[in-house]
Structures are given as structure tokens and as C-alpha cells.
Length: 288
Image (cartoon, rainbow, N blue to C red; front, side, top):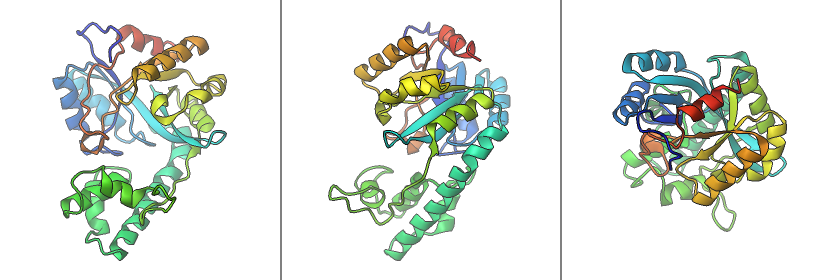
């Protein structure tokens, strides 16, 4: 998963903290990054820029250049599939980001509360305060926090697996799990626009994983400026396709571990060298 970075510098442009759906604090993430030799790290929590100022300050103390970012949970309405748009070098707390993302944050937390109520009604011995405690420093409760409670109560062996699929997904016959509740996401075009308004570089995250390659042309015309070629979920074919599209549409190439700690699937992709060197980082910065 390397594009020839020197080893002296390691750049990771996609990483989460407990402000969204990582079980690690900002401090823990940065210390792990330093142990892994990361010198430039983008914090890209889902639908929030909370904690970025703190991350930048801590990064300076630890010798890590923290790049303020966000990952917006979006939707491709033409093709009816989800999409994640990462914004790098955004202005934390910018009005355009807050106005777009705050409804998503509120909806996610409200749906999570209803999921927990359904599970309690079905006999699962968990509580809303218990689940909230796992999301203690975040913007709200995610399904991973609910699974953490179920795990601790002995209902599951891991965050992901048969229990997660049974409760939160649709079965092959189309029957929804008892805690399945669909989310409404913002339009990917609006996510791109908001990131641009916030002074950032909009980058399509893990398009191979999400099945977004067909939308790249339209989104590039609308202001998309980068594509994440290097990601743990990407096959060699996915990476090659992303690199080809970057060349075709003049997009900057990005990469990151998408670190979620224990809440990752699979878990524990640690921050590290992600195929982008300092020249690649400067090419992304140059489009600002």
C-alpha cells in the first residue's frame, strides 16, 4: 500500500477519534501515530470538526503536523448508494460544514436511541445511559457503541459479525433486523460544495469500497478535487482504477488508514504510511 514514500516522513490522510466512531481519544490516536512514525496526520471524524483545534495543539507538542479534516456521510441519489467525502485543510467550525452536518449528527443519535429502545423491548439487557457512556466524548451514539454494550453484556464476541448483521442489517429475504433503521444522508454534491466553502479540498473516500467510481466524472465537474486511491479496503484493482480516474480528471491522489481503533472493520488498522509522501501531500495542498 505504498507509492514510494521515503520512510523519513509518513503521511496518513484519513483517521478518526472518539469524536465520532473510534474508541481512542485524540491523545491516544496522536501517540499511536507518533509510535508508528507518522509525521503528517489528518483527523477526519464523521460529520464534525469538533476537537480539531485541540488535535492541532497536541500535534505540535508531539511533533506531528495535524491536518484539520472531516468525513461527510453523503449519498449518491442518482445511483442510490452511499458515498463518503473527506475534506482536508478545512476551517474547523465553519458555518457551511455545521449547517450541512448537524442534522445528520442529530438524526444519527436519535435513531441510535430508538435502536436501543427496540433492543431493550426485545429483551436485551442494556440501557441508553450505558451506551451513551461509550460515546462519552463524541457527537452522539453510533451502532458501534451499541454493539460495545452488547459485547460487554455477553451477547456478542466482537463489534462486527453475526450479531451485528442480525440486528442492524436486512436479511437475504429482505427482512430487517429488529434494530435496523435507515438513515437519510446529505447529497454528495452538497458535501463537496460545503468543503470548498470551508476552505478545504474535497476528496472521494474509498470509492472501491462504496462503489462510487461511476460518479467521479460528475463530481469532478462539480468541484471534487481528489480521490482516495490508497485505503485498507481497496484491492489492487480498486487502487489502479482510482489512479486512472485521478489522471483522467486531474484529481489529487490521497490515502489513509481510516483508523477506527476497536470500532474498525476489521479493527485496529493503526495510523501509518499510506502510500502518500510529502510531494503527494503538497499536490493536495496546492489545489487550495
